[in-house]
Image 1 (cartoon, helix red, strand yellow):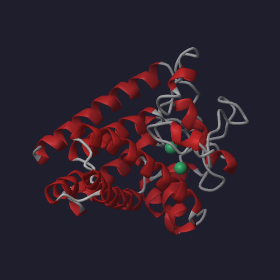
Image 2 (cartoon, protein in one colour):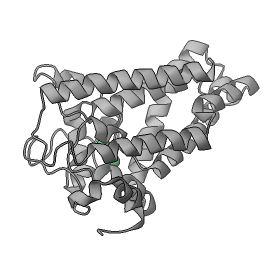
Image 3 (cartoon, protein in one colour):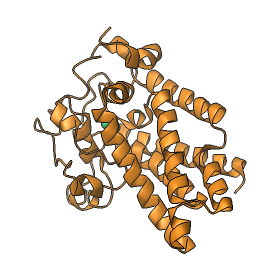
Image 4 (cartoon, helix red, strand yellow):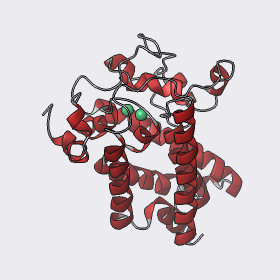
Amino acid sequence: MSPSLEIAVRVGGAAAVFAVLALWEWLAPRRHLTVGRRPRWPGNLGILAIDIVAVRLLVPTAAVGVALIAAERGWGLFAMLGLPAWAAVVVGVIALDLVIYIQHVVFHHVPALWRLHRMHHADLDIDVTTGVRFHPLEILLSLAIKMAAVVIFGVPALAVLTFEVLLNATSMFNHTNVALPSWLEPIARWLVVTPQMHQVHHSIERAETDSNFGFNLPWWDRLFGTYRAKPSAGEQGVTIGLPIFRDVAELAIIRLLTQPFRNAR
Ligand SMILES: [Zn+2]
Ligand SMILES: [Zn+2]
């Protein structure tokens, strides 16, 4: 696949998903936002723009490029095991999801990494834009981890592209301020991380912040004992964010960028 086609697929797909989810949460919000969109969206979307530029400038080949090189040279566990191409794609997507889950747990428990990741948690509301609010240094670090996983496993380029398109879409979806129908939600959360499931992860209560780490597949949390059904204060009552960075001024883009390097003010 040509790099320009890859970019077109990713950008076009993500923009369409964003538009649909933004419309959905505007028409049928699950919760009343405490600070709303206006103070938050410029910062969150500005961070997205910086992340896109940082990744494209510093790592133009990205993870798909590494997958193509690995395939050409026969690198990785899947090649060693002689996995058929279709199986390598399926197992590759699942393996990358497990890697991202483990990475997320590690980012919560290693203090220096938590400083990068907590910017995502400092949002005072959660909506579709929270799903793209990650510090550029976290994005670059997570890209490096993903590239290492691609080489170690020998994940095919198709699996990498599928995973990235899926992760962009599900990350936006599980932050969207919507509620799935009450009959559907308990079934859906066995297949994909739902917005109600990920809401627990944004609770101000640390034990709840340290649960529901999954982004795509909800199984890892159930398997490794990090699953929590709902926040103790309830879906409507839960306070979103962290005990620090609660000032509305912290939603400005310059503050978001500097949060890893300072406390409170
Ligand atoms: Zn987190
Ligand atoms: Zn989140």
